[in-house]
Image 1: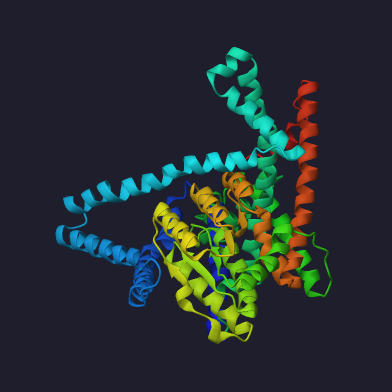
Image 2: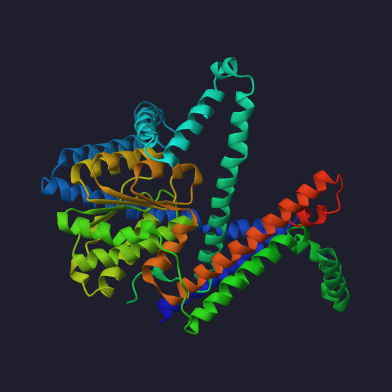
Length: 210
Length: 289
């Protein structure tokens, strides 16, 4: 009983406090500092503990893969090696040490950038699929995208002077109108979800009823 | 009107008690945000009103949402093929309402996978989200009388690095070849990387996000996409719980009210422009912050 009630009470109080905070003027520095500390201080503390839980989950998963030699277990060995290497350079030379920074700059950042750059190829394949003029809607999308792309390059201006401003109109009027329509729906959805959580109507995030 | 209320409350508070003489109402309440307060109260009242009626037993009609109707079909397909279901709960933390919506949907999906004994894989970017999801899925399996089928290790943490996470999930898709992929919650640049890889493996894909910039990517790469608010409606839609459906109805009426206000605003702005007057500015200013 207490296990279920306490989180609900905490959620209600937390929700009400956050709403109150929104209406307190920025000029009231003591109150702003109080609420900022109240809401942000505990986060890094909990975060540190949860990072350990996350790491334990990761290690457990990959250990099981190696132990049972499941498909792709070699990647798990690399994961273990990576974690061990970063721990050695991190603990050995400190968080601000050169080896950790080098490992970050020479391994992590290039890998990250590589993954991001693949996006360009995926965009091309997704655009190819989206622009196949099979239906009226897809045809409108194709024509609009063509106009917008043309209006954004200098070649477009050489065809027609008014193309950049027409492109701008497409982006700021019809495109913006549908975006705002979706955003209004999202805001109401957020409001409704928040209310359901604050008042304890939506409880599935609490997990087990045991 | 808001300024008058503010002056009245301030006067009452400062004159009624010596202690309150030092209390400045303006220090604790941003009067410029009164319009926000009024609209929040109106919309909240509408939502709570319909929740109250749902509690009393009133039944509400909810329009069909194709993406959510497909959930059953998607789970069934995975069961028939004997392949797992991949559920990506977005890349954001619990601060995001979209993540909470994704967790709520996961609970409903997990109930269906528990019924059909289908493997459910949930890779996580945030350890806190992972812990909650383990609990939610466990609860779903217990509710369906299948606690033995619940495998905690299928809900696991990968990394908090955005593209590191994508690399791992893409690898998972290629190796495990899930029959169904769910992408629910908050996504950034990784949306297309995930959805395109999923499409290339032949999986049926259902996405839902409130990130407007990512919606086009999901549209082109997924079979079904929940647009913005549909993500928040999913939990109510799938569970069919009257209380949750009541809140959906409240949202619909709030939207209707907003549409009326927008039409009035357009008329006022047009009249201001055509008549060269600022007679109707007061209505437009109601919405200024």
